[in-house]
Image (cartoon, rainbow, N blue to C red):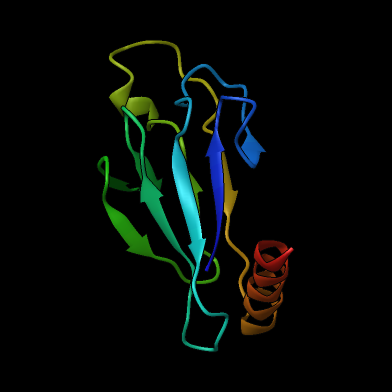
Length: 112
């Protein structure tokens, strides 16, 4: 099982310096690498992680599909009247081949 952390702290696998992003905002998991082993995301932030604009709360995990949009910052409507800023978002592109390669790389790294 491979994972990647995302957040503002420099020890994350993916670092995002936006102040609205938590120190460790979310964790992506890639399980197994088989055709039916889609990746998932777990929220570990204060303000939530969004999958296709559905808000996940701290500790909540969601299975992902290719094309999902993962947002680390709030909708403009949720910013309490503050000036709208661009959202921090990722688009997931997933294939079983990519997942298998990631799982194999993680297994090799763990064995080293």
